Amino acid sequence: MEDGHTTGFNRRAAGTLGRHLARRLVQIGVRDVFSVPGDFNLTLLDHLIAEPGLNLVGCCNELNAGYAADGYARARGVGACVVTFTVGGLSVINAIAGSYSENLPIICIVGGPNSNDYGTNRILHHTIGLPDFSQELRCFQAVTCFQAVVNNLEDAHELIDTAISTALKESKPVYISVSCNLPAIPHPTFAPEPVPYFLAPKVSNQMVLEAAVEATAEVLNKAVKPVLVAGPRLRVAKAQQAFVEVANACGYPIAIMPSGKGLVPEHHPHFIGTYWGAVSTNFCGEIVESADAYVFVGPIFNDYSSVGYSLLIKKEKSVIVQPNRVTVGNGPSFGWVFMADFLTALAQKLKKNTTALENYRRIFVPPCLPLKRESNEPLRVNILFKHIQNMLSGDTAVISETGDSWFNCQKLRLPANCGYEFQMQYGSIGWSVGATLGYAQAAKDKRVIACIGDGSFQVTAQDISTMIRCGHRSIIFLINNGGYTIEVEIHDGPYNVIKNWNYTGLVDAIYNGEGRCWTSKVRTEEELEDAISKATEEQKDSLCFIEVIVHKDDTSKELLEWGSRVSAANSRPPNPQ
Image (cartoon, rainbow, N blue to C red):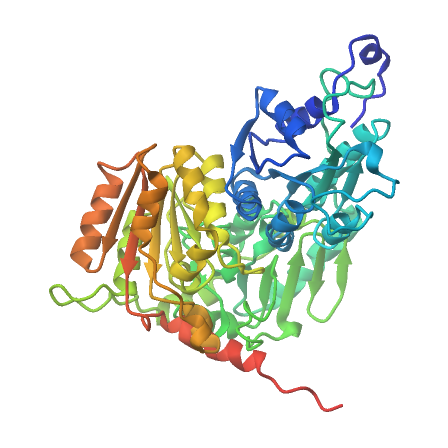
């Protein structure tokens, strides 16, 4: 990171900590920082605003600022948020935990106490009333890969640069606390223009790479009907292009795990759908589970992705390719082999084998269309998603909220370059409101289409306000079915019924005549068609909020199956002691 030639910098006027941090954010690709002001971070915010390449986006609360940084990182590769000490930090921490689970590099910056207060016995505001300022730090240690407490200028440069580089190398969030009295103070270590930023690329161990490729090719070239399955860690490994190279070379059918959706081109001729055990795309699950060898690239097998641990996958038939390790069957396992290097090399060694793809094409029957509706029949969810499918293009991106939208959006066929994001590992309801804000701010060339349930929306609704302030033109489908439908299917009870809001009325009140915003409430297919037509034509430059009223029991068949299996997994009795 340093080039060793610092004497020239020392002769010139020293830079400040605030400017150094702002420039570093710009250098790594951050253009927008999501923030909530508080007395401990105000001076730092002044320096971020003063940086020409940086735009400060003020959010309604810290949780949404964190979710926005998460969505931003999905589109741009890295995100950042700034909050105040403890009350802000412990509010944003839920979002940061979600980003950690999804391997997203987030620079979470907190304005900390005055440096003179460290080591004293003073009790400060915004704390729990103890003369110990480490509570926030100790909480963040569990959900970040590096923590920097900057309370003196001597090591501030090193701490900040180490934190940022660790976030990028590990693809995880980091925590940086900056004492509130330090951002404006010059120091010789802060050159007026920070030393150019550089991260050495990771390179596979060549001998181990060759051994891993040889062992894998031997298994796959002997197999009769092998398949290729993409998982969510393709993103963190930056191996999407290498995956396509293997797919083109081998001729195997390509499936995705549910959390891998959006990482693999679905217009690829070998694409067969989502492998999700009992709730897989029709004919896809059968082809994967009947294969005599399967390559899982970047998988995460958890209780949700395995449908309550019910996948019919045998370890001895599998090759598991993780970002830095390859395991063939029950062994051997090859470490320090990076996914993109491995896939590119494997593509050269595999024989073409289209047997499983031909089997799929023989048994495939195209999905049927939803039943024709009666005139003025209440709108059904499957009709809604038929119309959303027709809205998709390379200029759109889909954000899917935790809930039944997982299953309905999973069935959408994504055109080339259409973005797709959801948070399957952490599954925090309300994530999509902030994520839609952040993704739309990062990907201004795309129109975001967000599918959000009413229960989730009630958690984080306020930052519709920030979308309007930022001039976003996202389309939000608010699916109003009167409760937490996904939880109803896992375990029902009166706690899953929520107070109904006038959602369009709420958004109109937030809009309040400032900016561009349009709302519509629809109950039938005719009203939906009219709303979509307006949203995509005369209101194409507005934030469009369409409240879709559907029956409380109108769910996807996949949720019914998945919910019963996850319920069975959750309710297993204790093992005998």
